[in-house]
Amino acid sequence: MVDVSPSSVQSPETQNRKDSLQNSSLLLLSIILISTLSLFIVYLNFPKLEPHEKQHFKLPMNIDDAKNLGNVLSGYKDRYFYVVLFGFIVTYIFLQSFAIPGSIFLSVMSGYLFPLPLALLSVCFCSAVGASICYLLSCLCGRPFIIKYWPDKANVLSNIIDQHRSHLFYYMIFLRITPFLPNWFINITSPIVDVPLSTFFIGTFLGVAPPSFIAVHAGTTLYQLTSSSNIISFQSMMMLLAFSLLSLTPIILKRIFADKFKKP
Image (cartoon, rainbow, N blue to C red; front, side, top):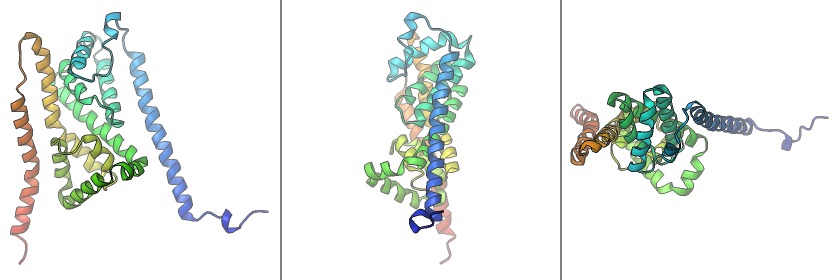
């Protein structure tokens, strides 16, 4: 006999929640497995290192680490260019996806290894892809943690996003250029405050370009430091300020023209 008591019958809403949870868990597991598998593929395909090089083959946590790792990889770049490039991309995306520190030093190191246009494009692409994966992870399971640990900051960001909803794309670029909010916090909070993924991805890709250019260019100058070159930080800060103001220009113009043509 089939049990049709109320306790045995699931409402459509309950079933939908269970299906959604299962799909979210499956997607989360897939992201973790694919990320881990990608790193393992890089490890399998990377050439064998010399004993004195292995001590420097680690995630860079400071400029010296980035410089040492860059020196090691530069010896393999010519013969194994695509392996080194693929390893850089996979590692960068992995760090961004799971909000692991160190991506800034990978950006610097890219200036060591690759031509500036390729390095900048790679860093912007990896930043956008990794941040979007972090966005999806937060969308799947991040809400309870954000509500528990950062409710006030999340509410502040939500109010700011609501104020700029009509020009959210330009404001997302502005947030990425300026250091007002940490990038990891923007990544995990954006799906919670209803920032569309397309706006998030493109805004991130374009917004990280100015600070990434500074980091990549620092890599090229660091490479030249062995032959007496200097990094001019004041010019870098002025460039960031200029790009920050430029990103706000469409917002300001939109408000000016909206007020001008508003009917009395």
